Length: 416
Image (cartoon, rainbow, N blue to C red):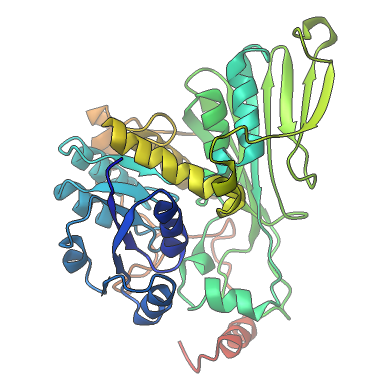
């Protein structure tokens, strides 16, 4: 196998991902971050790797591919720069933070041989791999419904978490609509079923934090429930990043003959059930068991992050480069834009009382023209430009002055 040279853009999550490429025999060519403190932190974890704060200088290092792992909503601009130089892209989470960026990405990719791979790792968790295997095996019958929940509440009194993940008042997590962080819930069910959302609607549950909680979050919603009608007629019910109940990642795939799900709070435990009249040979009506890797790289997988999913996702990307092909659904750019756009338009649906929105197909030039100038965003831009879209279902919601003061004190910030 060729020894691929990998650049890392984003010294936090990017370094975690880089370690998996090292396991795969790749060379880390350079590390880039526009924040010098984060860059120093990343350089300590990747010693002897050249570091840059300028992205264009970073791209001049002769690399084959770049891990795009900068801020959640700012991937598209840098991905397009890679496309322009024929560099392959391994992109963390969403591909486009606005609808216009989706159009720009799609158009740019048509003019390049660069491989784009969405680094969405949750489909490669051991229980999701088992659900994919069963769903694709056909014993569930025609798949007509699936659920995906990424539920990640955190302790609002945990200042260490806040310092690492919400370290500035205008940080994207303080303005993150509950629908936007969607790939961890939507990606696994798209992967298991092969379906892609075509229409979306959403509602949010508003439950802001108590006034005693130090916070600069301008989102008072705890969860958004997102429903999609898909291109094969099936239906998904998914969350973005939810904060309800107890922490869990749970998924359920339902067909005309049976269903499979991972059991909340039960590790790798799978529940596979069939109707009594459609039990396949070799199965019982009710099957409860632990999912297994059954993979040649099991020891390396177990040493990787996110329950082994990081290693497998990186391996899939390298396999695409080795075989000279673009990735399959749902890791290709078209799927990535569909996922990201589902999160964006689900938020607009929620703001408009559940109004349905069609998910565009940018193969269609009419859809491109509809969104090519749509730069609406709930986030601050890097240049300080203010959000142009409310981030909460209660459009005028904001934390109290006392909550913001407590947040700043917790971070050791004197003023904004």
